[in-house]
Image 1 (cartoon, rainbow, N blue to C red):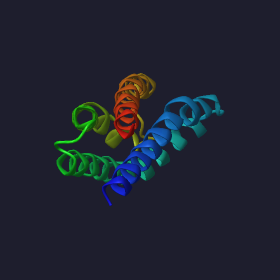
Image 2 (tube, helix red, strand yellow; image 1 turned 180 degrees about the horizontal axis):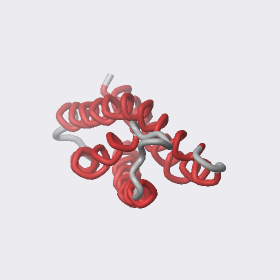
Image 3 (cartoon, one colour; image 1 turned 135 degrees about the horizontal axis):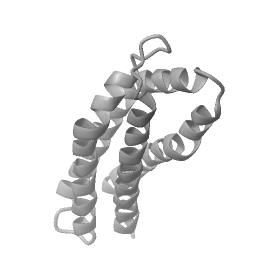
Image 4 (tube, rainbow, N blue to C red; image 1 turned 180 degrees about the vertical axis):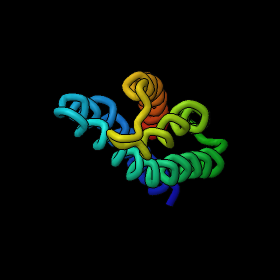
Length: 148
């Protein structure tokens, strides 16, 4: 049963990493290449859609990692799981403090009401997101290593 928890947790976190990696290195690049206001409208829609889903996914992932660490507390690899959990906590803190405020503004923007510095704000979000992606990739790698 615990092995199933470990695999399920790793898959859930891995899929989350894949989504966030795709946003950083595929979706936002597509949006940035679209003509006129299409990219900004796409980012706003993505912010609304993923802004509703990703908090649940992050918290669920963190809970699963915590359950894994507690269930296997005296087993090999628990330190790796705890370190992954710490990185997941860091990613949630980064999200709340750095990314969510920008996303909450950006998801309401239209070509008519966006601020003049909207591109700078999106670039700042992208930079924070790149760091968050690196953090969750490291957490995922630690979970994979803990399976061995």
